[in-house]
Length: 164
Image (tube, rainbow, N blue to C red):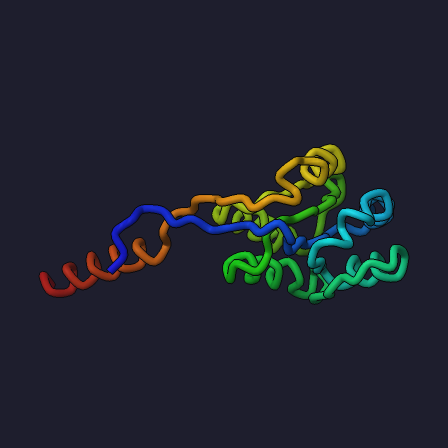
């Protein structure tokens, strides 16, 4: 049985970076990728469908594509965060346009926050993150020990059932 309240997860020097952009922000993300192509080329890149395809075509970077955001791509990226397979997210979101998949976007942001995954939602934050000395370094982040929480919940539910 696990006894610690948190665990340490390591972000390696070669990061797995998810690249995501709403339609009105795709061109801006592509320009940003071109500007930082030399850095991005040293990392494992993935992204939601259309964005990944456009970045690959227009920059020559290899970007593994998942489904388009409205077709579940945001949820796929979120699942990869839970699996520990995404270390870093660049998500140029459009705050002025309603998105049909807003609940999926909100869920992705929540999972990134829960697992302490660095996430940039605009160009300025992306600039700070990509130029950080931590970009090519190992970084250890501490997250809640969710396995322990599951055991505690299971135990409390078992106690409740025994009392019933």
